[in-house]
Image (cartoon, rainbow, N blue to C red):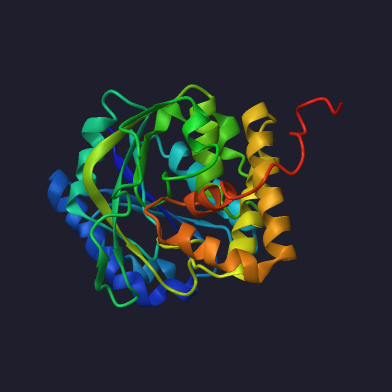
Length: 302
């Protein structure tokens, strides 16, 4: 039986969350009835070998300090794929797996990617919301990358993949790609991978000040403009496609409108952020308030 590897990038700022992370590994060990191995991309975490010495499985640490976010994630995935494991379970260092993450393995018997819901917790581990996916219209199956063009719900804490399903192109995450999870899974799906949803929540997703996005979007213009920049950087780094270009046009127009009239757009953004949704759904909702400003870059001007 091939090993199950939990794949994580580790960094010093998340040290306070190490006990909860390790507790999640132990929960997964018990649920599987055997220890999982760890592949850790070390982005500046001190004394890493000592910190993870209590785990029951093997620990492989690959140094990645000084790289951009995308490159750290690439090193992490490359090391896991090179370990000759059967399955890779992702979990961010500030999050924690639940026993239900063991369900990923059953899903991976018939799919390339398994994904599940997240419980939202605060920085102290208190429950904020039992479901990230609630009322967000997240599909049960995905074939093709269209479902990830305008939004994302496949992160590096609620997913698992069959190692043999990862093509080399999907491991080449651009060095400074902050939305590395969105990029990686978009490329996997574009290469023909299929994804299925795992029942229930598979991890606890921690909300704190250092989140790139967080489970609930901040309803202020400056934060929304940051998300717009992240969205546009993501689209421009993927292979060009008509639907991606159209999505980029809408978000570019939204950013311009919010910058030109932040007071007028504040209530629109507040409404968009209050609705159920996954990552970037707030931008999609806000963009529906735009007037047609210009033709798509894919259409001929008259």
